Image 1 (cartoon, protein in one colour):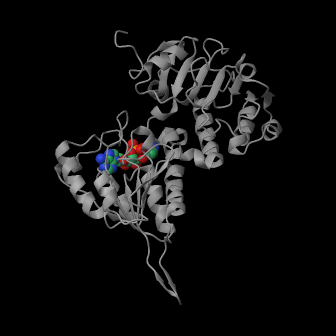
Image 2: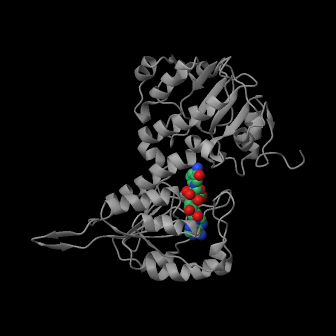
Image 3: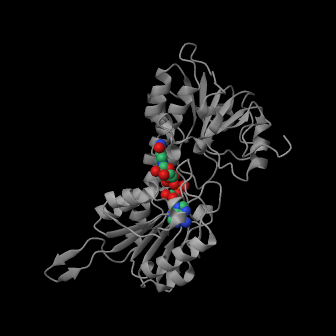
Amino acid sequence: MRIAVAKETDPGEPRVALTPDVVKRLVGLGAEVVIESGAGLKAGATDAAYKDMGATIAGARSQALSGADVLLTVRRPAPGGLDGLKPGALVIGIMDPYGRSAEIGELAKTGVSIFAMELMPRITRAQVMDVLSSQANLAGYRAVIDAAAEFGRAFPQMMTAAGTVPPARAFVMGAGVAGLQAIATARRLGAMVSATDVRPASKEQVASLGAKFVAVEDDEFKQAETSGGYAKEMSDGYKAKQAELIASHIAKQDVVVTTALIPGRPAPRLVTTAMVKSMKPGSVIVDLAVERGGNVEGAVADQVVEVEGVKIVGYANVAGRLAASSSALYAKNLSAFLETLISKETKQIAVDWDDELVKATALVKDGTPIHPIVKPADA
Ligand code: NAD
């Protein structure tokens, strides 16, 4: 079985799908691994490091893909990006499938099977394959580091002979995987932290990290979690009450990190321009949801925007800002899933299309779109 990794074609993507240590594991399992030259450089993995672990280096993408049974990728390949793969090959990565049926349908024409790692069910068996968690955890950490770098003051309280520096007040909006790590990081840096979410389960998690929970806890809040553990989109009535509470809280904050997402929907708008303007000059807001439409009015992808002295940081692909760490975890997520698709006896691809992990993540089977997210309406 031949596994290929090509260079990511999106210039904003420094991560790589396999790191050298994971190559070693796959080679140990009997696979042949081919890496396009330079694929890991932005994540700190040289061709030599891959070679040392048993990979072959290909001079060009077409060379890496030719004859491969599996293509591992970070992002969905661009149109034409699967050319050269053989029909029946598996393509596994973060496919960003919502609203992308046309692009995925185009890629499907090569006759391959395509799996979206972000659709992995959040069940115990699949925890090791959970790319949303592995990447969001690092993004939550990095968001606070980015906020601290933009903030013209210290995070911790400092009592010095020359006077006392007060602790920064940090507010984290959305206490999922990224938000909880943002809370923990801001606490470690010495900030006074508060957080909000619409899922009741998050209240205890926020408190256990030593942060204050701030939320509208009405009847709708009590039912805001789906059976999958995600947030529902809230009613306009709830949003109005939430906005009122947040407006008074946010005005007293120095740092705000927003992480709120709803699967398959645009990110909820939580911070208005009026709220931004109510903050003290020098305050910093980091919007981790900027790629999904943003939680913060005025946030712009990959820019730091200033509104009346308040900085709105909108870096896209924040996990990619820690490319070595995020690639290391992502590669482990991918290889754990791939191992479920390989027969232990024959060491060849043997997909069990009835397995719940396969059913949840398979967008395309042998060239045919099969997942409801990408299936044409008349199919
Ligand atoms: P996410 O990235 O989808 O969203 C981030 C957070 O934003 C969530 O906590 C969500 O509730 C919150 N949010 C959404 N709308 C909001 C609004 N209007 N106002 C405030 N907050 C809002 O979430 P996630 O980090 O992927 O976590 C989702 C769930 O999955 C959580 O319950 C988490 O504990 C769970 N989880 C389970 C496993 C597992 O069991 N294997 C692994 C990871 C996460």
